[in-house]
Amino acid sequence: MYPGYFLSKQVILSIFLMGLIHFTSAQTGQTSRTSQQLYQEIAGMDSVLFEAFNKRDLEKLKTLFSNDLEFFHDKGGLTGFQQNMEAFQNTFEKKNDLRRELVAGSQEVYPVKDYGAIQTGMHRFCHTENGKEECGIFKFVHVWQKKDGHWKITRVISYGH
Image 1 (spheres, rainbow, N blue to C red):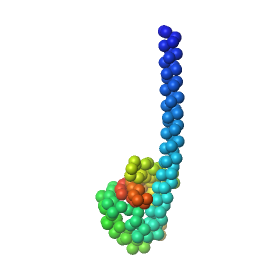
Image 2: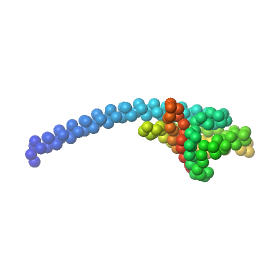
Image 3: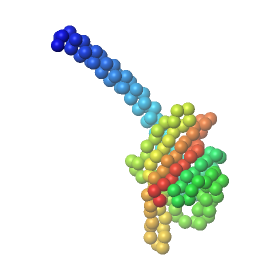
Image 4: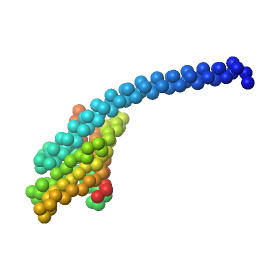
């Protein structure tokens, strides 16, 4: 085989790989910073959301969901904003000790261009029943929209019940 041909292919491949590595590194660095910031924002919103839930603060919860909320539950079906606020109110009026905790390490956050973010994870709900703590771990997807500087959940998928 012609030695110059082999050398040319090798040089071209090296240049291509170096460029690809440089491009990937630059993109990963930028995405990583952006993703980390977004992850922290959504983690913070998750904390606000479930602090309000755990404290039975219905007025705060109302501010964290969009009026056009669609909540998909594998057992309960599709519900909207008003139905969910009524369900929260009914739950809170029962004076039970239902509480939610995010399962450590389960949360993932993905950006949605020009909209907000998708949050996935698992959470644990516990309450006392007949003097014994009962808990269940379930999966969820929250679609967050950032509008006018405020985060609100527009879609919820709750499954694995």
